Length: 468
Image 1 (cartoon, helix red, strand yellow):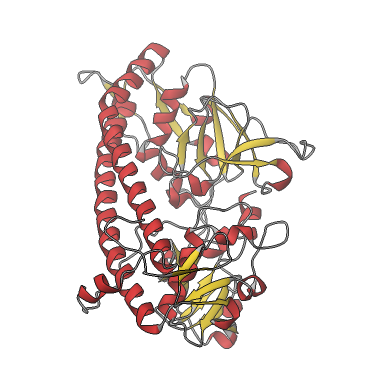
Image 2 (cartoon, rainbow, N blue to C red):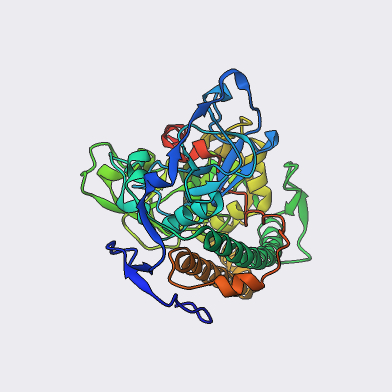
C-alpha cells in the first residue's frame, strides 16, 4: 500500500491472480469491450509528421533526428490520431525493459509494426492508456504472445482482463497520475542534468590525462592530428590497430544451442557505463547479432548508431560474456595496459572522431578498420600508463560515487512511480478525494526524461541484420 493513500471500502475477487481484488463497483471485462484495432495506411503520403514511441511517450521526430532504419517510403507507416493507443508488440522474448505503450497527442504516422488501438464504450482514451501502461509496467504482456519472439497481436488484447471504473473515477485517476507523473518527471530531469554536469567534469579529467599526461612541465610535440593537438614529446603515435586486436573472437554458428551467456546490446551501454542489466539467454533464443566474445580488459565501442556514443571497458570477470556485432571489440596488445586503453577510447575527442567519420544520415555507422586507422598517442611504458590510470581513478572516484547515488535515487523514484500507477489504476488505492483537491489547470505534458531511445524500426528484427 502506498503511504498516505487508503483502499476502497469494498472489494470483490477478480478471479485473476495477477489482478487480485478490485473495487466492488468496478466492471471486469475482456479487452475487446474497450479496445478496437485500427490501421490506416499512409497511402499517397497523406501525412508527413513522423512519430516515435520513446520511453512510453509518442513524440514527434523532427527530420534531423530520423536516425534508424527508416523506410524508403513512409507510405508503409500507419496513420494515428490523437487519443489512439500504440503498443510495440514485437520481440517480447529479448526486450523486457523498454516501455511498450504510448498514447498519441498529435496526428501523424508511425511504423505499421506497432498495434494501434482506439477506445470505445465506457472507456476514456486517457484511462485506457493508463491501464495498458500499468499492465506494461507490471510486465503482464510478457506472459502473452506467440512465436519465437513472443509477439503480441490483437487476439491477446481482446482476451485480456481489464478493469473499468465509472467515468468520473477514470477522470480522477487520470488527473491524479498525471499530476504525480509531472512532479516525478521534473525531479528526474533535474537529477539527470546533475549527472550530465558531473560526467562533463569526469571527461575533462580523462581528456587532460590521456592526451597530456601528468607532468605540467613536459615538453610537447605536434601530434599531426587535428583533434588531438600537441602531446608529450616522448609518447608514441601510432594507429589504434597497432595497439589492439579488433574482434578477436566470435561465437560460431555451430555453438551448442543450450549454451547460456550474458549478453550486452548497444541499447544497454552508455559512455563508460552500463545503462541496463546484462541479459541472460541461451544461444538458440539469442538474436543473430549476439556473437562477439568478450573477456575482462576488452573495450567495446559501437560501430552502428554511433550517435549513441556507446563505449564500455569490460570490468566483469566472466567467461560467458557476449556483445552485439554492432560493437567493435578492442583487445589490448603488448605495450598498452587495458585500463589505459579504456580511458583513451572513452575520451570525448576519440568518441567524437568516431561519430564524425561515420557514414549515413539515417543509420550512421563506421567500419572497424576505420576505427583501427585512427592515430592515437600512448605513453611508451606501462609504468607511466599505470600512473595515469591511478590518477584518473583517484580524481574521478568521488564523482562516480555521486553519480551512482543519484542514479539509485532515480531508480527508486521510477520504482515508486511504477508501483503507484499500478496500484491506482487497478483500484488498490482510492485517489478520488485527493484528485478533487488538485488544481484543474492542465499543464503541458512533460517531455520524456530522455530522447535517446532509437527510432522504432531499430528495435525490430531489421535492426539485427543491420548490426551484423
